[in-house]
Length: 154
Image 1 (cartoon, rainbow, N blue to C red):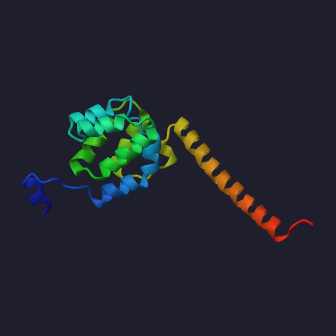
Image 2 (cartoon, helix red, strand yellow; image 1 turned 180 degrees about the horizontal axis):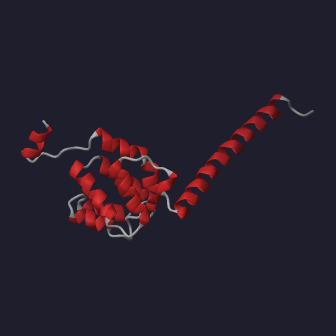
């Protein structure tokens, strides 16, 4: 069936493997891709991965994370050919984080600290620690409020 789709010019959608790779690495891709100042969008348009409207829509996003999140949403709905060309566009990048992302998308590796540059790793760790600290403080605050209301001071 797959060969028939390709032979008649059909578009082959992403397989479960590629969708799983995008999903499992979504946080890393949203946080660390640099597509705004590296001509990634331009190369994607030239290769037919994105339409000019999609590229303009992404370029108009003011926050990098928002732009990357929308790009990931678009890539989930694109063809297998576009996914592979997206990887090629990232491999041509001058940024290590984009080259790392291309390697992850191509080989299906989960995000591990070995893929981070030292700056990215420190940033990721500090953000993760901040989230964990917030959860601890939040649970302590909840506990403290419960104690106060259960045992009012007279």
